[in-house]
Image 1: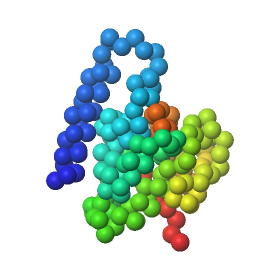
Image 2: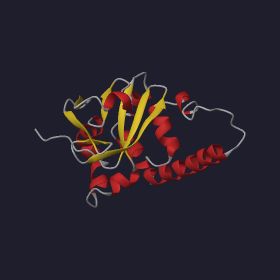
Image 3: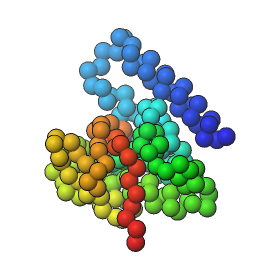
Length: 175
């Protein structure tokens, strides 16, 4: 029931953001100026396409951390990315008894520091907050993490870091 409530809230927020974005009264030439006033969590909530990620962050107890000073770089899977996981995976991970596994997965999507796209493309790997490394490759003009996860949008700036949108959920290496 809590997840349904969060999804409804996210839908309302995304509709509100969409209406504001379509308004012609905004003179701002910087598309990130509004986002820079929000934390990574607030930015993800407002986007409307990260409801599963936000629910998972909440279930793992990481909201306060990602609302904190940072800076953080988050490789954020969309709701569509979570839907690619085998049926029941998200529901299983959201159970309290799986909090550590969920935390391990989520922290594998976070890098300490504010790493913008122009820096990401110069790297061949990045150490995540999880402690494991994620490989980075530029192929055919696109950035891929761990060879197959595509970065589909970059540099969504928040007051405590930056979000890069990815098309799949990254699973940390076992071990």
